[in-house]
Length: 114
Length: 111
Image 1: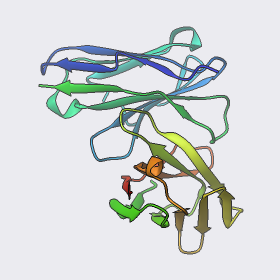
Image 2: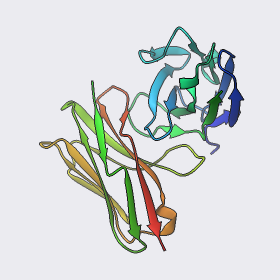
Image 3: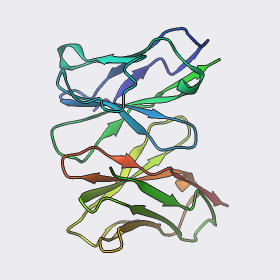
């Protein structure tokens, strides 16, 4: 079974530029998450999708971050404009249904904002 | 909301020794507690989890214990091996809500 795929793996941009990350969840997984993991910290949830609908985006900085999950499969997370403090690893995770368990994480995209 | 603390932040053990990582949570409604292992350059991987109706769970060399009264849970790794070196995260989740992760513990197993 293929895992959660993310691209790019690394991205370096200057502040005020825009950047987009892509995630392809495990086939058949209805729930998709985006997390932000700052160096030395645990993952922090940014947004949760159930199919193509948003379930929880309470911690997403909506003035600069946006995410979509068209057709309930792949998802993109965008930052526009980026700030220095956005430097982090952005993790995508997916799970099959509504239960709490078994979130599968992708390898993450490491973003450096200069 | 839920707050999860984790100790120690770094832990070094000799190969073959045991390692223990402890977490505390604040929300008494939390009922699911997973542990994730994150190796360098990779995403977190679930290694073991426990529900609030169980006090202990074991899977080969790893075990997790839960004390609901004290609101803390622990990860125990026995007979540590170099490949156990990684960052370990605990998390807590009230039913139907999302995970809140601890800050992580960097475990180094010395040969």
